[in-house]
Length: 340
Ligand code: DAH
Image 1 (cartoon, helix red, strand yellow):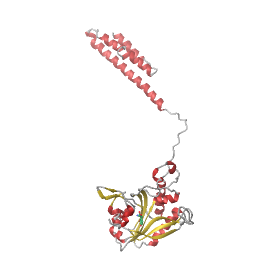
Image 2 (cartoon, rainbow, N blue to C red; image 1 turned 45 degrees about the horizontal axis):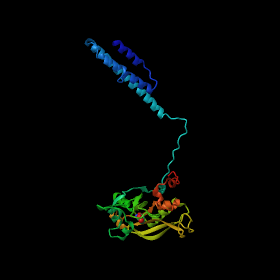
Image 3 (cartoon, protein in one colour; image 1 turned 180 degrees about the vertical axis):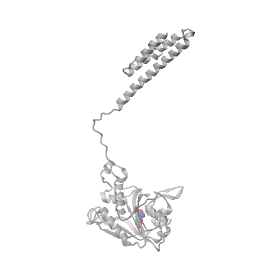
Image 4 (cartoon, rainbow, N blue to C red; image 1 turned 45 degrees about the vertical axis):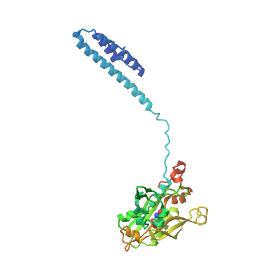
């Protein structure tokens, strides 16, 4: 029996497998129910008691060797298969990756930030989920004020004090509450309104708010700032005009038009023949708003303005439907290329 064990051990040790199937044949031949090792275990039953310990040990060793060898060979062939699967032909031409482009609203926003930062405006942001105070009341628009009608929004039913901001003017309040003049900042961000979605209105859009508070800030400063912005944004030949208007948080208030960037003021279907298009609201910050935000209105004055980013982008890129900005259709988006 001993010699049989040794012979089988040699056979196992010298076995060289050529394939996965070959390993399986070997496994059946050696350690399956009808395999040679199993046969030897059968024969072991007839071994005399004196030899049992020695032969039993050898037999177990043989079995372990056989199992180890089979596992080792199986793994070897599996590994080879894996590397075959993952190895690529490195000479093949690479797949081209489609390069993305910036969203037109980001382009316009970035350009605005760039233009205003050149004349000393910083960028500040505020929360999109607001309370009534920051969005309305501090801005001189108490609960029963008719101007609230124009800016219906989404409220939280459990707490009507919490709402989605309707205007980035709310950021003015945060800034004035938390810092001291001089303040010169713009606040770009998303705003919400309860509006039916159409080519000209949406329940979400973007605004940039501007705020400048210091001693002796005048309406002339406001005009010059907006003229500079309009020329930088729409071209040197751009003209501006201010029309009296009303906003609860500014006194005096105005709306600003620029000469139509398409027909250069001659009249076309974009400006409906007027030669002018409206782009923003502005005014001198109402002293009541300064006082609400704990800024001394006797010492300080300031101007503010607010404009829609979509509106500017539509004029700049001749986009006629507001919804295109939110649909994320690549055919639309990939037309806007710029580094900014
Ligand atoms: N918040 C106004 C709106 O959404 C726009 C605006 C008008 C902002 C006049 C201002 C301003 O800062 O002075 O319609």
